[in-house]
Length: 336
Ligand code: FAD
Ligand code: EPU
Image (cartoon, rainbow, N blue to C red):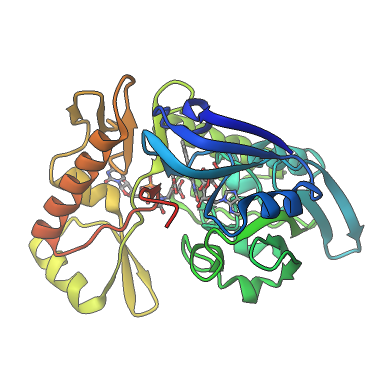
C-alpha cells in the first residue's frame, strides 16, 4: 500500500478543483485492505475511484483511499449467459469496450460513463434506458469495520434510481473490490430511450454499434471533463406525486416528465432551463450551455463558488415549482 501525506487531489476529481488531502492511500490489491483498516483504526476514510461524482473541498481533513485493484475475467458461460468478474479499479468505459468487442450484450448503453467499476454499483449508474442493476450478479466488498470480505446479491444491494445500500447503511464502510456481471451473447438491444429509437428497425445490430451511437450522442451534449471540469448531472431527476405533477402541468404545459408507476420523474434539466440558468456563467463556474443539469468549472475557481451556484438553482427551482432538487454529486462535508 502506497501512502502520501498532504496529497494534491486536483487530478483525482473531474471538476479539477484543487484539494489538499491529509493522507492518500493507494489500494492496489486485496492484501492492502487489512493494512488500510489497521492504519485507520476506525477513523473516517473517503473511498475514491475516478473522482467523477465528487465535489471536493479545498482541504480534506481525513484519509482518502484510492481504489486501484485491477483484473477482469470470464468466469463461466452457458448457452444463456456469461458471468464476468471485474475488479473495482478497472476503468468503466474501457471495460464496456472490452465486453462489446467480445460481442457481449448488456452494458453497451452504459458506454462512455466516466469513472471506475467499483463506483458503478454505488449510485447504480444508468443511462439510455439501462441501469447497472439490470446485469449485476453480485458485488464483493471489504468491510472496514469488521475486516471481512462479503458478497451481496442484487436484492441485498437495494438498488433503485441512483441509489444503493452503499450510499446508506454501508456508506464509507464498504470498499467495493469486485463486481460480477451477467451478460449475454443473445442479441438484446435496448433502444427505447429517445435518440436511440431511430435504430429500432436497423438490421445486424451489434453491442459495439450501439455503444458507438451512445458515445456519439453523449459527446454531442455532455462536456468532456478533460476539457471542461464537470461531474455529469449535478442533481437527480426529481420524482413527484401525480397530484403535484398535475399542478405543475397546469402552470407549465410543456413540462418534461416520465410516468413512474403512480408518480412522475421530472427532467431536472428542463426545470433549470425554465428558470433561465442554462448557459449562465458566474465567474469561474456555470451551467453548461447544452445541458442545464451539468454544472461546470471553467478553471481557476473554488468549489464553494460552485456550491453557492447549486444552492441558488435549488432555491429558484423550489420557489417556482415547489420541487427540491437533490444533489447527485457527492459534496462536502465528508469525514463525519
Ligand atoms: P468517485 O467519484 O470516485 O466516487 C463516487 C462515489 O462512489 C463516492 O461516494 C465514493 O466514496 C464511492 N466509491 C468510489 N469507488 C468505490 C469503491 N471501490 N468502493 C466503495 N465506494 C466507492 N453517472 C451515471 O449514472 N450515468 C451517466 O450517464 C453519467 N454520466 C456522466 C458524465 C460525465 C461527463 C461525468 C463527469 C460523470 C457522469 N456520471 C454518470 C457520474 C459518474 O461518472 C458515476 O457516478 C461514476 O460511477 C463515478 O465513478 P468514479 O470512479 O469516478 O467514482
Ligand atoms: N432537457 C432540457 N433542457 C436541458 C437538458 C435536458 O429541456 O438543459 C430535457 C431534454 O430535452 C430531454 C430531457 O430533459 O427531453 C432529458 O434529458 P437527457 O436525455 O439529456 O437526460 P437527463 O434526464 O438530463 C439523465 C441522466 C444522465 C444520463 C442521461 C441519459 C440523471 C440525473 N441524469 O439525464 O446521467 O446520461 O439521462 O440516460 O438521471 C449523470 O448521472 O451524471 C448523467 C449524466
